[in-house]
Image (tube, rainbow, N blue to C red; front, side):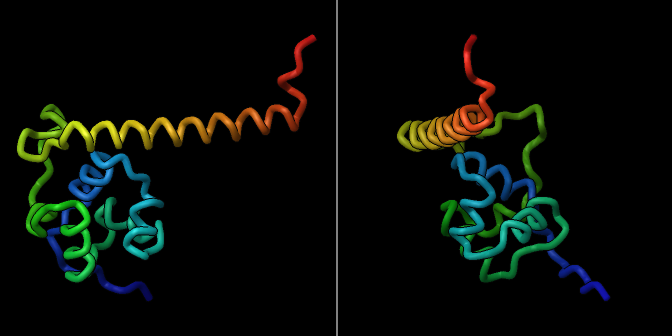
Length: 123
């Protein structure tokens, strides 16, 4: 029998927004919180909610008050980075560099798979 969902007004979209602003994957944040990635997916999808202690950890990681995760996320037409939540230039550069690093690793994996399969040979 499934456990009843804990009553909470935790907004998974806020968690997803904060994670994306930092340029973190779900796996990276899950590792940081020491929870399973599936748990994080359920939080972001509003299928479950973190415990108060986990909410406190999220608040510390993202430098926001716990209440921020309980507010409705901004409308889709609004900026992804409202002025009060904007990252510093150094943080934005760090996010972009991490994204580039992940893309480079994926490209290397694809190239290795192509070499293994022989599909990248030229006539």
